[in-house]
Amino acid sequence: MAISSPAHAAVTGWADGGSSTPTMQDLVPSMSSGEAYSERYGFSAKIDGGGEVVVNFTISNLGWGDGSAAVKVRVDLPDRDEYVYQKKVDRGSWSFSKNKFRLKVANTEVQGKGDNTFVVDHNGDLKLRMKLTSDMSMWSPGNGEITVGDGYYYRLHAFALRSDMTGKVKPKGESWTQIKGTRSGYGDHVATNIAPFDLGTRFSRFRVYDDENDVFAMWREIELTDDYGGKSLSFLVVGYKDQIVFSDANAKTTYARRVKDTKTGYRLPYAVQIDGKDGDDEVRVVLEATKVDRKDLLAGYGGMARMIASQVSQPWNYYFDCTYKIQMTIGGSTAKVEGKAGYVIDFVNK
Image: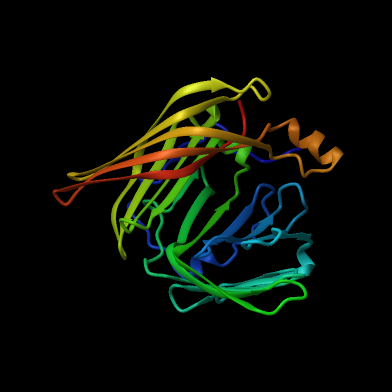
């Protein structure tokens, strides 16, 4: 698999170059012809009373053919079997708008409305209409991107940090049922023209909404490959009620209690500490794993595609059930929240 790579190029991280506030126009697909170009749009919401809705759109030149797209819909309703739909299509079988955010892949569509509302429609064996309305502005860590050399990038737009979800579902043979998720909705957009196995060896993430204290927190970390210096790039953001009250696009991540997975060879961190600082404000997040599940990210590939992909990457996904503690000193006030959640690590290269 020949992928053009800006090896040994200079890297700038999230914290370099000031700050950026994304808009709906930033979500419109870039549609590059580069071999490693891809974009992903993720929407999710936990349903009040139990259950979850997850919708992911992906556009990619990597492995599928130029301009191919895919959609995956997962609806988990209480007392029903989980519904999963996924479909890959070529460039002529999906569409998007250039002057507004609208994307349709197979039987699933998403549209942006105004500045902070997204409507998702899915018309499969289960029918779904979901609306996410964010009470926080769109946000990006620092300047919103990691840059590598001349023209290579990895961008992140969090367009729904914490939103209310309303909607309805219609399982096959049943009537429409109303659903809602109070402050549980989330959405983000990642666009890149660097293959993940070229850019990083590890991609980590954690997100939690503590409804008792009305606190939201999100962390991500990428460990760059040796070609790009092997540096760890992290960000941490905290929201309280309807406001982002803290963000550090250059947070420090420390992994501990590492245990080698004898099946994959990866060393798994069962404890993670994230330290962020913004002026006089400081936030520390401590994650302690209680259980871990792994998934082979190449399992869905066909035999030949799997053989080729495995030559350049050995990607495994790990989900860690964990306890979390967030210690905050913000605006002269100190607070602590704790609970149970989960963090995710995708190991891409050893």
